[in-house]
Length: 236
Image (tube, rainbow, N blue to C red):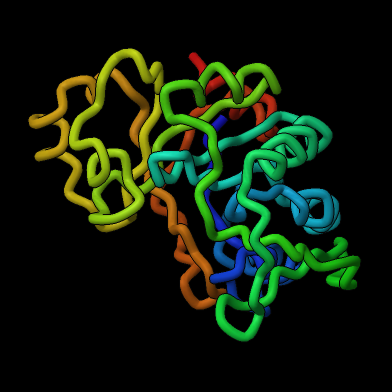
């Protein structure tokens, strides 16, 4: 079946995410825009995924639990999971690999944890906008241990992307998909980096504000509209 999907969205848990990016607001904005599926991918944490998944069930939108991980090399990668429990276990592990530096809400923004009705259930006090100690070389193997899938984020950007940090794509990374920004001209990247031709190319919004959420720009062919079907597709 054809599924309209945005697989890179931030909530108010991300320090750079607007406080209006609540689970309820994100899900219902996605519904208004015509999405079938979205993924919640906060920086280095999955703590708002449970609320978003539940909000999605009520709104009729599939929410895939995920994370935008910052690797030790400061490369951003999207990690997606078929089940919320797996995402939360991965989130706990990643937190243990992060520097123990407290967030400064007055500088970096709040890191708010919410339920499906946007009730505040807590705040993450450790600053999420930092690099973990996880190497990009080990990421595919690590994420697969939680039944998940991962891919490099916004390859066409000049910061925090695989190409801006390392400069090329190499087979040992084992990525089967790669992400570009919605307006990217992908063709020159495919010519310069032939390995990308063997990957599934995705375009996602990376929205941090409700007004940055875009109408659907990609349609995926999945066996069903579920997180499990998505991870199977991206791993194939």
